[in-house]
Image (tube, rainbow, N blue to C red; front, side, top):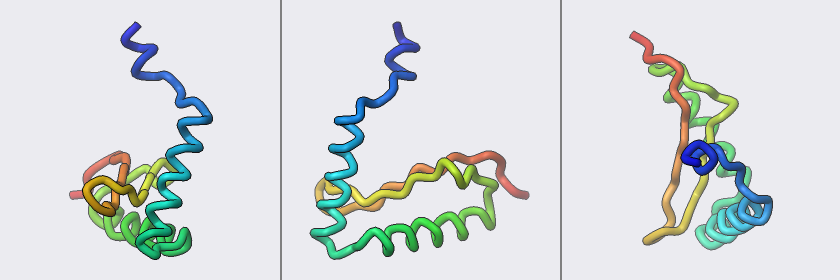
Length: 81
């Protein structure tokens, strides 16, 4: 039962809602999708200098919480020494 909750796939309606929320937030702060992608590339480039990361599974998004915030989920493979 625990495994089903942990590994449950998101429903398409939830994914669509999350994408719409991201689109609305980026529109409100004047950040277009090209700028968001440029930010993601720059963050990945800088972090990968110091840490080996899984570039294919990186997620960088702008969300609205107490104000606009940038959230990044970057899987780490190995720390470079």
